[in-house]
Image 1 (spheres, rainbow, N blue to C red):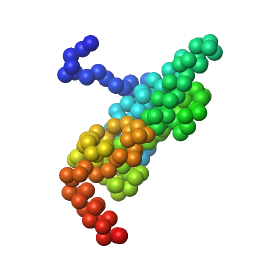
Image 2: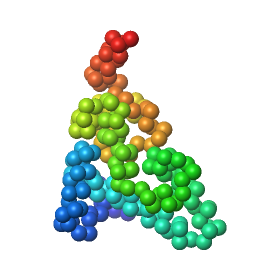
Image 3: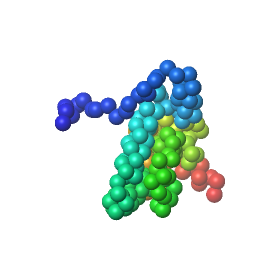
Length: 173
């Protein structure tokens, strides 16, 4: 079980960390998504690796058993927003990339919704407590946002930025 104060490692690094192409790709993703370090990228890759491994396990099962477990896995991936359609197949899960996971991070969604000027600004807003999901403050930029939570993202009600946004919205009308 482990000591509650010592959390387990949630990621596995690359098997060959010094390949030039891999290093360039990692640095491009870190810059594009405003990640703090490569560990955040490796966490996203580990999440993707687990999803794809589960899909491969299901493909190895006989057809009648696969049908029983396939629907819950696909519906969970749809609820989490990883796949675009609830009618997706296991092949769609196998075709996912690390970008699909990184697009579901709170930091990315805050930037895409226009609440921040850049990815780095989104990270700053989140860590300083100005962003909330459904009125509940979230301070983790790596939080994976589900589909139903996506509409609830906004400024924390007690944040000075929320008041400024309301005033700007009032002046626009």
